[in-house]
Image (cartoon, rainbow, N blue to C red; front, side, top):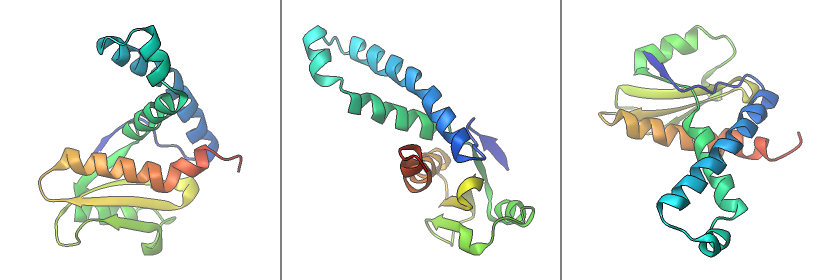
Length: 145
């Protein structure tokens, strides 16, 4: 098993802090991308909206989520070592008939999202991170729970 990524928030407050910290980086990425695309000032003002920067922040945050990569036995061992999760807390994306698996745990949501893969590890990691963001973080980061 190996682990990739930086963000593994234990609480909603920690997730919100990390999400907020991704905001300035997202603005820089969008600005530099627009510059590389030779946007003039008018085109930049027309096309680079708050929604564009917010989408960049969402993608940046999701891409930084900590994930574990291993085989099914490593995943089962990981789950067994944590008393807080049971089968109902795990959402599995993909086939149960392949051995590769990548997962992300969100303790504050009492959920684990996992995605299976046969050969395409990077694709599975991307799928998992997007799904974890959409299914766990998106609404929590935008509300005042």
